[in-house]
Image (cartoon, rainbow, N blue to C red; front, side, top):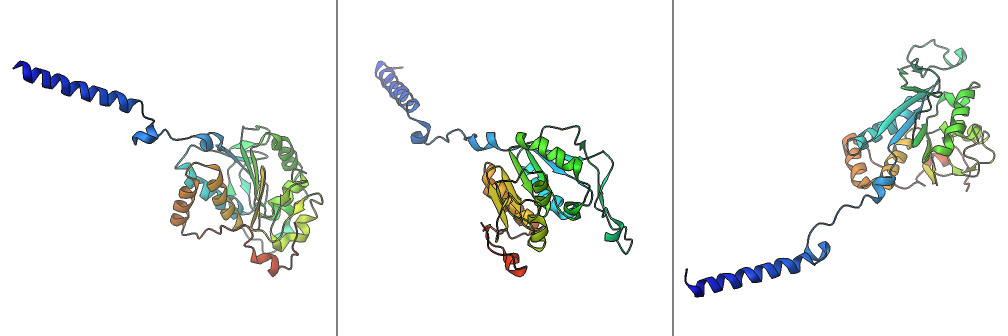
Amino acid sequence: MAPRSILFLHRKFSVASALLFSLSLISPAVGGAIPPRSDSKSCNSPRRFGFLLPRSFSVLDVFGPLEVLQALSRQTHLELALLSRTLDPASTAPVAAGMNKFNSSFYPTVVPTYTYADDPPIDVLVIPGGAAARSPDLGPEIDYIKKVFPKLQYLITICTGAGIAAQAGVLDGHRATTNKAAWASMTAMGPEVKWVSPARWVEDGKVWTSSGVTAGIDLAFEFIKQKYENGTAIAESAAGSLEHTIITDWRDDPWSARFNVPVSN
């Protein structure tokens, strides 16, 4: 190769090397590279969910939020614990025979994965309602809630599950709501609770409470939006699959007026 050609190539490579070196000094944002994804929210996001299964729990109180959270589990790692007194199937059947006057057998059962005594590590405890909230036999459930509450990141109650949590004393001083059709009986269980109406759900620090049954689904969507990376996109995608229109305003609660519940807190 001629000396002139060699000199030209030498200069060409020198310019290219200098250009590459200068680009290496530019920050990723300025240089157009995608910066590393921030995991600040995902690191604090709860992963271990426990669902309480007292006798006579409401089916949808459990499986409504569970369906939403199962959609989340396809996007991030979650763990599920189904908690009851024993590992025998937990039934939705009424405790008292008088509450089943037609002697129906239309009561599904759910097989628990842990007992209260097992005390598996959980980040979130979900407490459903139903006839369970009016049961005179809630001692083991109340004891477990008291024991586990200080260790939780979040406590979630669905419908009259707030009445069970109120009996355990863990809602005292917190703003909370419950099923408006059962307002009088449930709020009487927690005189030190700051009961809120109208409210489809209420968030107060580590305590999240929903109004009646289906309100728990909207609470679950809001929880995902707030606590998980890309939560809004995940929630909207899951809602589309379920063909569910998310109620995004926590004050959107026509049932307070329907059941003559006064405005409070």
